[in-house]
Length: 195
Image 1 (cartoon, rainbow, N blue to C red):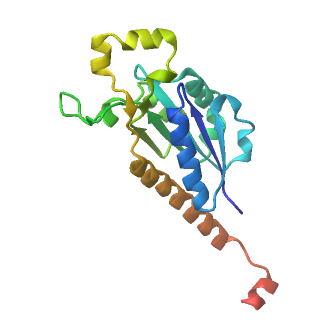
Image 2 (image 1 turned 180 degrees about the horizontal axis):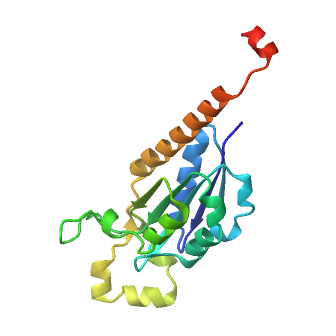
Image 3 (image 1 turned 30 degrees about the vertical axis):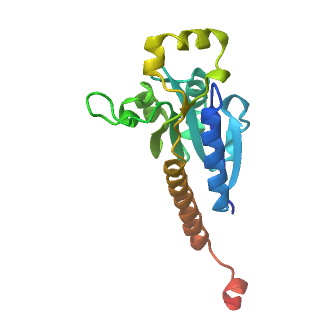
């Protein structure tokens, strides 16, 4: 039996989509059957054995459609393996002024609530990307303000090696679980003779 995984994401300017696509491809390399969907386009969740769900972080929150997706599907999600990821911090500085890792302090404020609803195996915050040319007019105007430019860095800060290691750990957990289930399946007398 092949493990079917849904990698679902909510994105505003495609940085999170890029991370989700990378994760999906890495899971496929381990022989898992993977569908990649925006959360608003995800179909019947009952068709999947596991889930990786990600969202961009804006103002310390997951996008509304990602929060709604988890909330409205919590019954299915809480019964299967789930991993969360967030895309958010920008820049090359990894610690804030107090010396805390930005990945630890930049997570969505509702993560405690999401964890209670679904009990994910892990939540990881990855650095994101910002391309000013993809922003709407209002955001581009605001971005030109000196205080905003100082606090937001333009560029691609996603650490593909970090994402690869995390996705590989998920794949290894799912494939080892699959192998254990396969070994536990009863064999027929004919199969025993063929061994």
